[in-house]
Length: 186
Figure 1 (cartoon, rainbow, N blue to C red):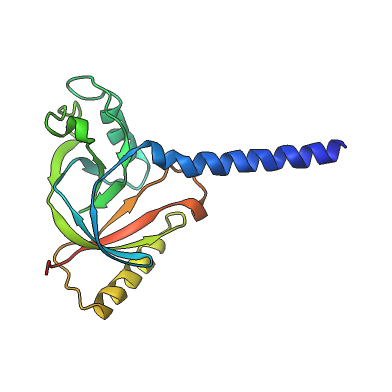
Figure 2 (cartoon, rainbow, N blue to C red):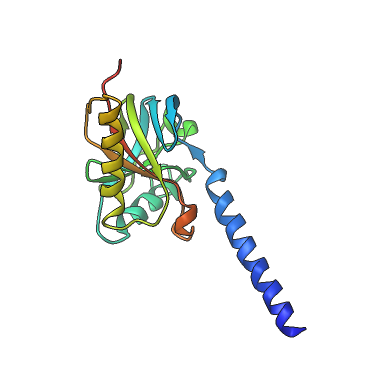
């Protein structure tokens, strides 16, 4: 009886953890885009201009924490700003998308290491994949995206970047990750 209770309790904990991870991203505003074409795990998307808060990427977790402090009131207005998805890795920087509510009047960062910038409107080819971040995961995903782009005669029009949608405690198989490449519009 005790063993059966332990098994049931363990299964409930696992089920609760999976449910919590699966719904954690759904509570955040997501950067808007329009899907122009979908092909399985590949898409062509049109992104509008996005206001972003950026900081240089570091090998440790300090880049994320600098941006988190900014949205947690570490700005000139001392105002909390809602977390959004995804976290972009673009041009050697980590970037949080500024929520629509703060787009017109974005609080200035208190730290000189955080900069409010703009990601221009662009059309991108995107490839969605799951798993934890490793030194090989992005390059492998990028290789798949470029092969798909070549097959579909799409031309690169800018530097590739990546997007991560989930908190670090989300199991790898449940994570939503993407690599994106700006492409020439038709």
